Image (cartoon, rainbow, N blue to C red; front, side, top):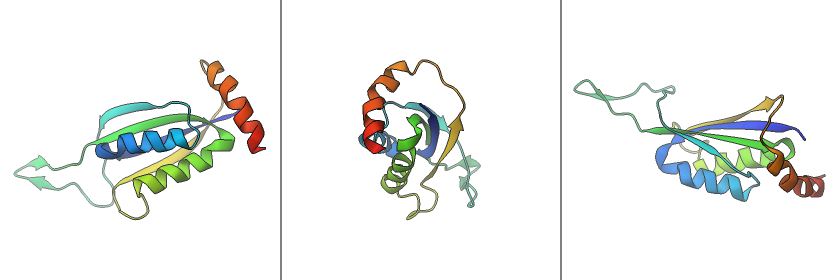
Length: 116
């Protein structure tokens, strides 16, 4: 079984919605890293020298490759990435190898077989 890693950088107030949507689309788990910082096309605003940045979270999802595109599109839709600039981004990368995912493989085998 092959996996993809979906990395999502989002406003912290959307984290729970993104994780729930990813689970509904087939993700079997997630890792959330809080209090990330980032900057897009527009520079961060400041007020008396203090940054007025919206707090960001990083959500990592190790998903089976046949489910990855659906999960990625679901995340983009729920996060409104294309509708509202600066709300977040998500991308996926190939995972060459992974350990500690035996329970996911057992659970996903029947789901992936139905997809194929």
